[in-house]
Image 1 (cartoon, rainbow, N blue to C red):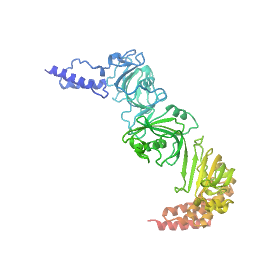
Image 2: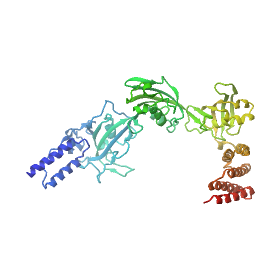
Image 3: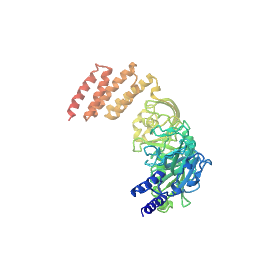
Image 4: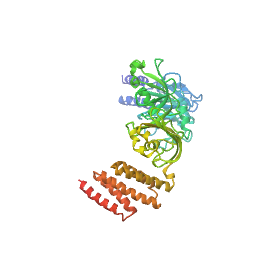
Length: 559
């Protein structure tokens, strides 16, 4: 009969719903019953709703235990109720201060007066917060990023991989005042019981590449100490050309197959470490960040030695303990090995500026032949040494510009970079061979901290140096020196000698550009230099003449 058919149909909907692995709200269930009865033009008879999707009136009231619906009372007063949908693995649970990674859906379940919002959502049918549409899991710190205590209690009760539903009474949520979320404008009404559907993916662990093949478990407390240290600065990592001072141990099947036996210095980018470890060091690990546990798929074990040499079977993942103590920054200035600067360790002040051109440094310097050769520049402490003023070989000045106050460094120089300076120093014969310079920067002053007279002197030195290069036909190098000189006195517009020096530097840059220009934009740059010179002295004949030549050349280059 039709009534019997309706009962069977509704029972079938209930049975299917109870086996559904996805979250199913009471509203969805009720709508399915309504559609079924409407299609048969009958009044649906009473149907027993399984505990899996039962939301009784008592469940949402203050003091309700929720046991009727299969929920467990986490707080003892009915404030936070939990129903496990999928069991997690292991016995560990996150604790206060941990970084948890979740997928969740948050809806309003009811009001404390017993009025139930059957579809479990706000007006308009949308959850008030959800991560289900996010491309990556949502991360929270269990202690600082939690907006209500019920949410924190819920997360702290879960195991890795667990999926559960929670009912959080208003006094464990947003209470009598409710809450309006600033970003979305969504409002939680006063005295609202909330329903969370949460899947806890992991905590204190990052899937670095998003493919599950390179997982990092980190010491959250060590990272928090760094974040609260004002001298830590923003996170910094070694680059692929640096030397990492690391400790590591690799295990596979409980057997150690690779170990550093304490801290050691390892050049990166040369295949001396598994590719996965190098990626962690250059993209995630930080100095003082504690010990990391890295789990990597076999393809990230790739190393110059190969899998067999490491004793790791193909297709088997490995686990590493890794700690970054410090790293040495390595700079190959000309990318040919002729001038390599190694900054030893990171400075205590992460905001310390590099000792750039025209800055003054107090430094201790020693120079000797490469490979343990003779010392030809005995250890000396030089005060107020202006970088770029040619008081020491140019290659060493360039090397110093990669260091910071409070840092030691080693500058390895090939003879091709020092031969030109051989005639300028009493130790010139040693500059005709490869050399190594040890440098320690005690303190430094930025160019703007020099007196105006000191800046004018530095600008004139660079002008004269540029003239030497220009006469040798090295126009690009000469242009670089003129530009350095200009930057030193660029803002000294009230000092007569500085203004005169700026005028000469504009004209000299224009002369270099005239030698180098091939395109229309090159000639336009020359015009700009002439205009800058004429802004200083409107009757400057050289500037007028060169500008005219540039206009004609630019017109000839135009399409």
